Amino acid sequence: MGTLHVRPILDMRRDGAAKMRAIAEEAAALVRRYRGAYSGEHGDGLCRGEWIRWQFGPKIDDAFRAIKQRLDPGNLFNPGKIVDAPKMDDARLFRFPPTYRTIPLTPVLDWSAWDVQNDPVTEATTAPGTGGDSTGGLAKAVEMCNNNGHCRKFDAGTMCPSYRVTRDEQHLTRGRANTLRLALSGQLEGEALDGEAVKAALELCVSCKGCKRDCPTGVDMARMKIEATAAYKRRHGHTLRDRLIAHLPRYARTASALPWLFNLRDRIPALARISERMLGFAAARSLPRWRRDTVWREAPRYGLVDSAQALAAPKAVVLWVDTFNGHFETENARDAVRVLQAAGYAVHVPGLQGDPLCCGRTCTATGMPDRARVGGGAGGRTRAFRRTRRRSSAWSRRACCRCATRRW
Ligand code: SF4
Image 1 (cartoon, rainbow, N blue to C red):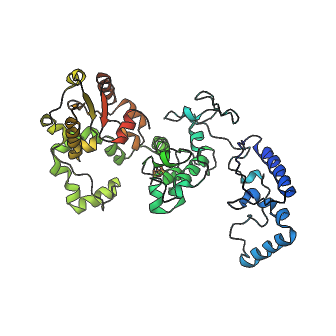
Image 2: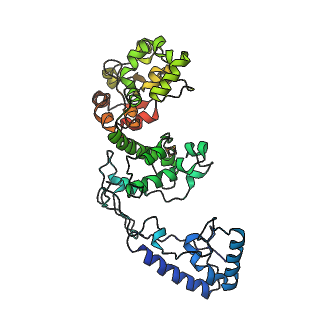
Image 3: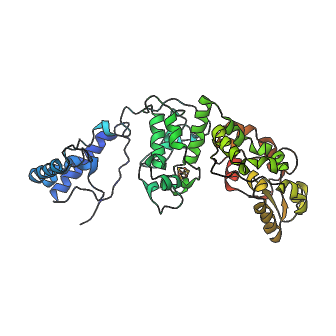
């Protein structure tokens, strides 16, 4: 007695269905010959429903039908499973039928690593960008979700916080991937990547990257959200809220000079309500508190070194301080400096003068990835990188590190 666990690699968009039936018929004949059971450990479902009748015999199959009819006369529960199941190669039920096509689309991010052809025998892949994906690899990245449902688990590491709160399939990595797949293949009632359905599915994704790490196939929904948000904003335009978030690093130094003024929103309930109505910032939530003692003002007291001294020092590190730790949670950055200095490092913090050296994360979050590349301090950031490239780097925020090094 045993279970055969096989997963033949078949391309259902080409000749996969015919091959699947041939394999199933051959396996069924073997099972019959050795008087085995054809049912799978995960149930029979659509894949094996067709084979129930020969396996159990017409008498039991008719009994299944009679029980189902008695308990579910309206055929509401799982229609077409076990009783009156369709053919296993009924293409209308395929996620990727032979008619499956993706729409033409030029993505803003580079998805070419997914746009490859895999040889199922040798497992060799062709060069990036040669897979023939009309969306530059985005659709193939989305199709990495094989619906295994790992993201529905509550003990699977980080993935997926928005589902753990809502318990709604729509707000789950898998649900989001399915919505994106339908959008990219023109099956979303005329809506594409820039439509309301995609926006609604992605809205509660907190871009934690939990799925990239915890999903067995590494679906990176946070990256897909950047792409979809950019498409939506390209069509519908940016709101004042988007601009306030995106340009935060630019006005943060000015705002921190007048914390009493910029903190009024959280002190006066009427202002919080107005900000909710006009900008969409929930009145019930407080915003990060502005303060004068930012890293930029306090830095002269930290005992930091400049870039030339960092290059000359025997043991030096470049500490990239992000907008939030630099302005709102200054203690984190200050303590990071202390820890590094206690470990014997000369610490250099770039961007203490001049324009802020922002990683661009606020821009990617609000649908402005192009701005993250060319604006928001990107030029200064690149120069600072070059100046200090021979030194180790530490980042006060992981998301900023990923964004600045363009590992979205
Ligand atoms: S990045 Fe989004 S989809 Fe992925 S685990 Fe986090 S919240 Fe869920």
